[in-house]
Image 1: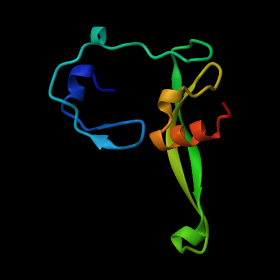
Image 2 (image 1 turned 90 degrees about the horizontal axis):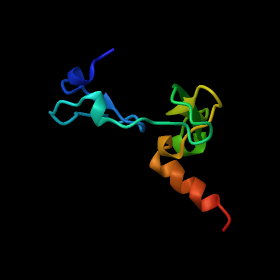
Image 3 (image 1 turned 180 degrees about the vertical axis):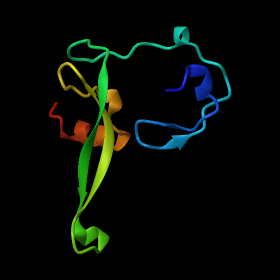
Length: 99
C-alpha cells in the first residue's frame, strides 16, 4: 500500500475507472475528510462491481457483452453512497424519480 506522500508519483484511478495523474503536492491525512456510509455511518467499504449489459445488437457480436462498473459498498450494510455512482448512472437514476 502506498503512503499518501508516494501517491503523488503514481497514476490513480477514479471511481469511474479513469486513469489520472495526481497533482504534484504532498497530502497528509489531516488534509483529508472521512467518508461515511449515508445509511449506517460506517467508515469501511469494499470494492464491488455493478454489471451493465450491452446488447449484441449494438455491438454486432454474437452474444451480449457485460461491462463491470467499480463501486464502493459499505461493509456493514451493503449500501452504495450516491457519490460512488458514475455520473451517467446518477442521471439515469434521477430521471426515474417521481416528484
